[in-house]
Amino acid sequence: RSLSQEDEGWRPYALTVIGMAEAGQGKSALARRSVQSAAAAAADIHDAYAEAAALRTLGDIENKQRSFDSARTAYARSLALYEHLNLSIERAEVAGLLELLPQR
Picture 1 (cartoon, rainbow, N blue to C red):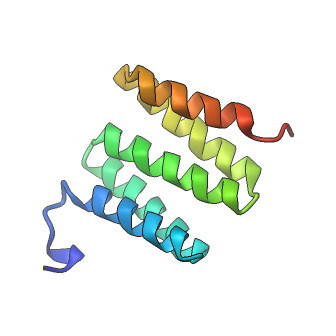
Picture 2 (cartoon, rainbow, N blue to C red):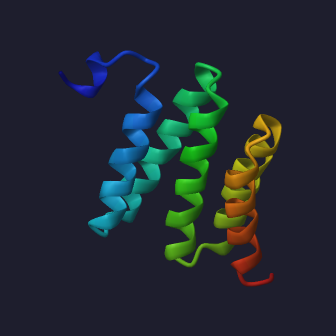
Picture 3 (spheres, rainbow, N blue to C red):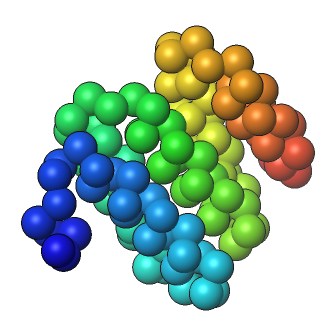
C-alpha cells in the first residue's frame, strides 16, 4: 500500500522515517519537507508524541545543515511537547541538543 492509503494515525510516523532516510541520503530539502509534513499531520490528528518526534528530526536536519536558528526553533517546539507529555528522557535529550547549538 502507498502512503496515501495508510491509516492517518501512522502517516506522521511514516513521514518522519521517510525524512530520516532522505536525510541519510543527503537529500536535505526532501527530508525537511517530509518531516514538516509529518509534524503537520501529527498536529492535525492531535498526536503530540509524533509531532514532537518529527520536530526533533527537523531540528537534527536543520542542525546538520548549519541552519541553527531553524534547528533551535524545531528543538524548542519539540521540547515543549515532550514537557507537556511529561516524558523526561525525551525532554532531557532534546534539552541537551538545544544546549549544544552555537549561541546566537
